[in-house]
Length: 230
Image (cartoon, rainbow, N blue to C red; front, side, top):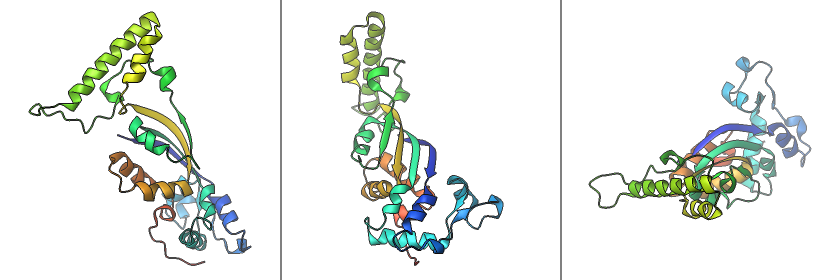
């Protein structure tokens, strides 16, 4: 399970200005702020998503050409910032944290807040656990047993403040536990993540990649519709 909310995209104007610095071609730029969104020359939702800023056809073509030329030429993508809130299981966060360059993550604290509320099934990603009563082994039943144990240790910890009970929760906590984080990324690191993870076996990465595809002008990330010229 993965949930991505509160997406914000910023920095297109500065990225385009910097993109044209090497060739002093600022006069060719055709991007601008939308004065009237309803009369915008590109899809209205795209303008709204990036603060009412329209990307012109010439600028978009140059973006695509620079992306095709490689990471040295597409540095402008590092200036397009994306922020969002992600809730996902710990096993997914371990893979997300592979990407240390160009990312910032502020997560809810398991160490400080693990006993803040009673554990419930919805605190864990469990959509693939076997719940067929005819099956010999029931994965969901095991998780429910662990949740019961976690809550017993939680209750004892709240009553006694014995750190030994806290350790039981920390070391018994399954990697399917869902953690929420606010993250900052950019279009360059999203391009790396998208192409590395789009065929991954985890469903969470497929959902993440579909979210990437929904971002404004995502073709410069995904590689879709890359034909263009300055």
